Length: 198
Image 1 (cartoon, rainbow, N blue to C red):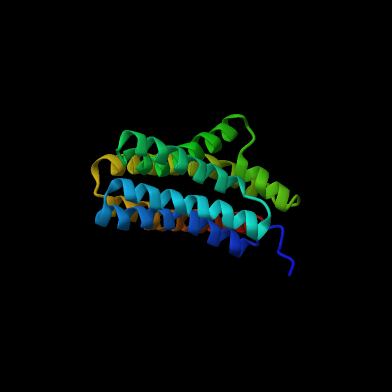
Image 2 (cartoon, rainbow, N blue to C red):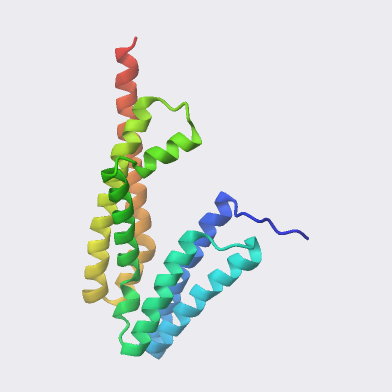
């Protein structure tokens, strides 16, 4: 049986969930019952498992998987050496801060990532949409910066359970709300633009 060389959007989403949430769940449950070190090892094992899974399933590992799990493993090792789980908990905040640097950097260099993506997928996209994607690049970067600040606070001052909820559920819900607001505002602006041309 031939395995697909590239993940589908659905499988890519599942891989993101596997890598983003399962290590956190494992860390939270194991830490509560067996201590921080056992929780760290469990979370790191699942991080390695995702890399192995993608290697076997798709014959390649996505860039996001390398970045996310590379940070997870590196910070996990630091946590094991220092005997403190805080470094492992900082992985979500550092990853989100990296997204902020990338998105805001692309906007400052006048090559906004979201605009480049829409131009690549649909070269004939209207200028209104391209301009909207340019602004969205900066706004999305700010969104990740704010979430990184909250995640940093959570890593230091929240319980492991509340930190895990922020990492697993909090970012997902807040991202859905943010994207919904972007879409609603975009549709209203597009409706106004269409009315002006009538």
